[in-house]
Every structure is written in C-alpha cells, then in structure tokens.
Length: 244
Ligand SMILES: [Zn+2]
Ligand SMILES: [Zn+2]
Image (tube, rainbow, N blue to C red; front, side, top):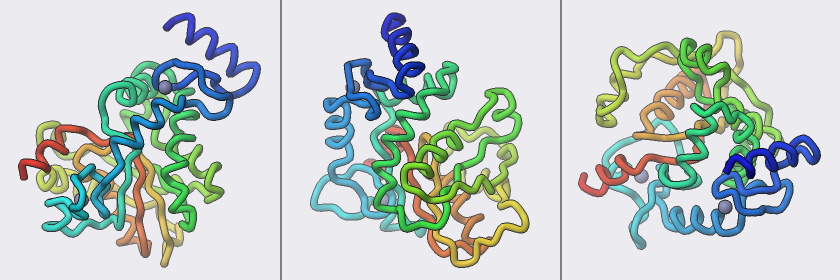
C-alpha cells in the first residue's frame, strides 16, 4: 500500500490525476480515479433505490417506510454507495488520515451522481462546525463540492454556517437528531436564494437529518428546490429502516 501511495503521489505530480483506483488501488485510467470493478460494485449497491431519499430498496418498492411517513425539506437525495468496505475506508482516509487529495477522485465520482442535477443554480457544501474545521484544517464536503461544481459547471456557494449541536448526535434516531440539530445552521446574510435550485453536497449521510436541516435553512431563505448528493450512507440506518 505504501508503494502504491508513492506511485500515486508521483503520478499526481506528473499528470495531475491518480492512475490508480482511489478505492482499491488497482490500475485505473488516468483522469478517472476509480476502476471498472469498484464502479460496478457501487452501481449494484444502488441499483434500486427509494425515489426520494435514495436508500436501497427491493423492487418493485418505490418509497421506503421513512418517505411514506415523513415529509423532508430536501426534495431528493442520492448516494454513490453504502458506507462500508473500500468506500468507507477511502472516506475515512480523506477525513481523518490526512489524505485530502482523495477529495479529487471521490469528488469526480460524486460528479457523475450529480450530473442529473446540473440544472441547479448553486452547489452548496454542508458546513462543518467551526471547531472541527479548524482542527482538521479543511471541510471535506467543501472540497467535494468544489469538484462537483467544476465538473457540472454550476457555481459553488459556501453559504451555510454551523454551530455545535446541543448534545452528541451518535446513537440518536432521526427525529431526535433533527431536534438536536434544529437552529444550529444558518445561511449567510445578503445572499439571494429566492427561487434558487440548490445541490447540497456532503460526504456521508447517517440518518439524513443534517441534510434535512440544511435543506430547511435553505428553503426558509427562499430556495425553491434542494437536492442532495453524498458519497455514502450508513448501513445502521438502512437496517433500522428495514425494521421500521
Ligand atoms: Zn477499484
Ligand atoms: Zn426513502
């Protein structure tokens, strides 16, 4: 793996693009950043999904239980894959392992998912709490959003700000998470969102509560439509969803 990283680093310096798959390390064509096998695995995981929130379902179901019972602020949400295996490890390397460069190939993969939403007016990253961003030095969602913005040719607007939630989010269900998050985000003043169609970008969706709170804030500020794309969504939620 260390050897691959060195080769990947040299390749990036020489060609600006990784020539190895960012998920499994197998050779991938320069400029693509993911191999055909990994693309196929992700496509299979997400072959049949809920029309609204994008969680995998069994055909011919079109809506999951959550979307039959709840109204969301966002209009639609899609993820590239499930938060496990190689995708999870690449995301964790990008966020916690100091491999910020991974936002380029992962962002390019996310751009494919974002293509059907290229009619939007703005690409908006989900913000990090200020203290987390300062400790990490960057917001990985903004890095991904920059890549998506460049690839689908829609301007990036980093207009959301976020404060610490009132209590820890882990182990809370979706409605408790929403309650915990309510009022922790706001849109920058003086930005005209009237009638805007927005594409929200984040790395991982756990229950979708963060995306929903961001969508609520954007719509309260005048946005007409909010679509969301994330690299991955967590499996715990999928299991809870199936049981629920
Ligand atoms: Zn691969
Ligand atoms: Zn759903």
